[in-house]
Length: 479
Image 1 (cartoon, rainbow, N blue to C red):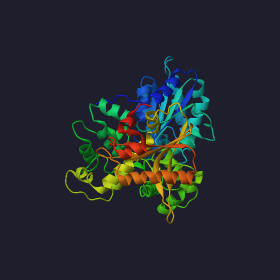
Image 2: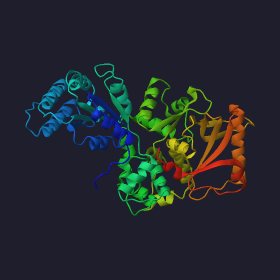
Image 3: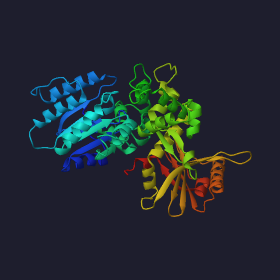
């Protein structure tokens, strides 16, 4: 089945604007593994790519050069005499000679995919790319697209390059996973017509990663699909976690240690706590690892309401990684319907609540739109206060601090049926309100918003405490 282009409106506009400009362009496309970077570039530039090479994982410089020559031979249709180069400077000189032979006319795109794999240690690949850009491409209105899954490497080595590529990036795209709305459109393009509760279940396990969503099959429920994709013998994603991080990071063991540490605490960990749990010293190494995981889209950082920068919390927000660590790794499952069984357990209920909260935090623009805040400046955060002694502690999932002297306190609850505010839960909400006011000393108006999976039962407590009700349907709004 051929893949239909879904979403990516802003990213497509960036690429088309580069195509329409009258200057040489160097476009950097960054995003985590399997997010659809290559498909985006090939779809938009399919009629303009005159050369494309993809780096080989774990290959030597010699093998990368051989791969380069083979691609050059293919694109030139074997009409261009090519002698195998020994250095990247020689390789790029060959590329220049090939491009000079091409007829004038349409804009030419040269595409380097998985750049971090091409730029092997001490290969001086980036020097060769600098030579190609500065000596020829910039004078010939060429579009050079560089792409890589190791997002932090791309930022440090290319975007912030101190040498010949310094300030040469003209446009930058950081490709994120599909939103829920894009996921729905993608599944529909593949003739899969789920209701939104089913889509949420799929998203909580797989996230908005097109390569993972491609495994979903029509005619089967979310539970059946997750079981087939993750649990049966030889399931496609059963061991994806073991390949995911080593493919992106050198010495990935420490990155995985941080991911495991973050999976132990639902509301997130401070830098100091991550160091303690993971065993990684709280120094430059940890800073680099956190930066790389953040740029690559596996973790997110949140500054709790009213707290200083040093108190910011890191959370594991990659859906698949969390799912794998909670339900697949180290587990021995018997029978064919493993996920059907696991989805009835208490662990599932705890995980699904956290996973749904993560999804909501990734769709804050949609939440603000549903609350009709598009014309009001606001800042989003969370709130966590640990009580001491007789002092009560509390946690608020999402705090929207508005410029119109109002703060929305958003409670997030995922249930497979209507959620009912009981007397006990109502007392919990009143406590949250009391603690928040006491700790923050805010004079702003406080409004409770509840965001549930399928809706809220109307009773005396909901009427008394809740100013606005949202459901998972609101998360599917277009930005």
